[in-house]
Length: 151
Image (cartoon, rainbow, N blue to C red; front, side, top):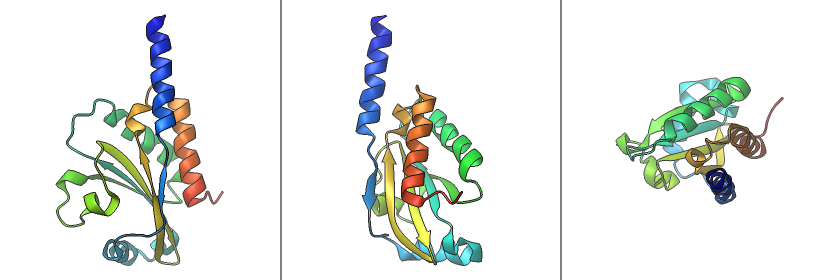
């Protein structure tokens, strides 16, 4: 019983610490111009980046699978999703662009009329996998509030 109570307290602590951070400026126009030139339909298609690293993280694969499942069910026609191992990135410099340091970070980039209008970073998703309902609620709330849901 004590273990269950402890697990619930840890889950709530992780959710309380998982606050999205908004950044009003988009830091690198080169990546955005490459994205937009790849497909003319990208002018108004925002981006969901799922950044992971080579750091040991036992719950990261599960969190990534949960993000992909939500994306495939809710957002596949609205936004683009990219899974990127940021430690293997040598050309885009995502680490400094988004100040990446955790084993798993999701970055939402708002795109409108061919320009990026800031981004929001979601940290600690790997700590929320024990409660899939709260995970889904947190993720969809962050996506809908920052990128907007066009439904």
